[in-house]
Length: 326
Image (tube, rainbow, N blue to C red; front, side, top):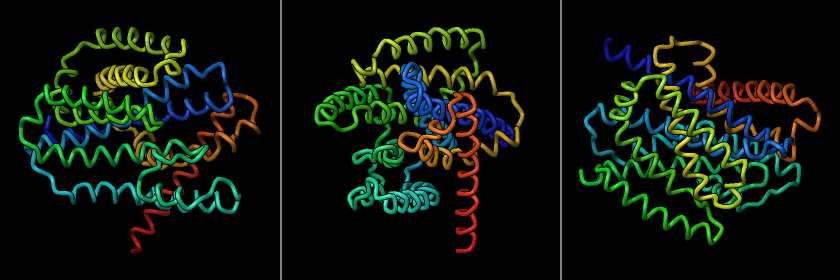
């Protein structure tokens, strides 16, 4: 199969995984929002599928970087990646802060500054904490730039293990002072996938689907059981580590399961606006929950999903038009 066809096939597979992750994250916040009995499954979905979103980015960027011979990247690379995020992120912030301002609810200038500087993880707004992801992904981009400019020693597995140990220690300290306690495990996992993306995909492709399904069932059953037994409340740090394991398990299984799937236009469209859906999805959750109007769980989720599709598609269209005009 020609290289271009392989790339298109891989992108179609990644589109499916991205849409699955997106739906799982929407379900996660629905569990938190209106169904206390499902808090355990909500924790599992949130921790696992947020990291799955991250490693999809790592695979896509890492494969491109490896195929080009692992070149040293300039800081312009980071700027271009952040600029791509900003095309949707900043219009979203304008709407968000206008909404907070006119509703006289939780608006302050510190929030505006930190969110504009991609630092919402350190200054969360009640009801819109999902924007921590923006800080995380920009940190990942900066780390890619740093990694690409280090010596080859930095690409050895031992270096990443040392980084994980050091990062784990830093995370314990961050947790003690109330800052995010899972930044460095996510970062080390992201860099590992980025560095060895092509090798990982080669190894996964050689695995039998039966073996992958077996490990998928075992790992995710254990992880779900752990969250139902309040692991997150007992040890958030450990819960994020095992969430990373379950996310990796899901990726491996789904990659092989869907690797020969043809491109599906609707899935491709959903994947294309998945970032916008992620941005807008909490507007109808939390304090402004759609479930206050819709009692039925299934109908509430369908209403939430369709409203997010509408908002995200409009947002994607308007930002595309603005970029085209200017």
